Length: 168
Image (cartoon, rainbow, N blue to C red; front, top):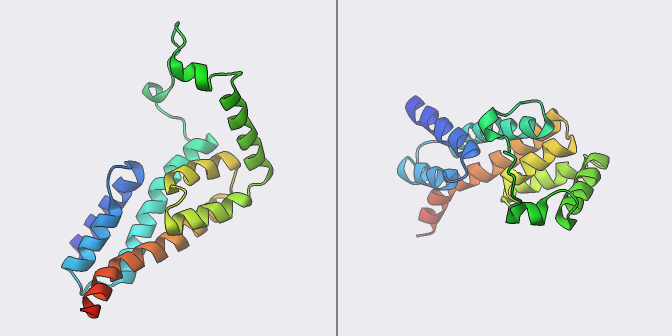
């Protein structure tokens, strides 16, 4: 049981950092394979791991964590297509600056968006974690909204195989 909890924590933390790992599939699989494991325990373990992993994105967006040098943008002599669309002075760059200014002016708006994202997954939880850092949301608000939404989401997912089997 302890090994399963530890492995679930590791997969959940990894999925928080690497978006190609599906924690949803893992949680449904745990619920189907080990129906005796409490869905609330699985939900709590996954919620803690997910929020801890997303805190790294949150702190990086706030500027509290300095990214390694290989992750910094490199200046190129020739302007790429991406720079023509998103570079300084373009419409997309001004739009991004406008969103950033609105987020900074109203950091509590992010709390609702982040809470819905942590529960439903739309908008993506990773994106709202970065935007919450850019908006200057408090760390306590980030952790509370993320934990509540993630706990509810993954507790339900862990219980879903047992609920489906009860219908048949």
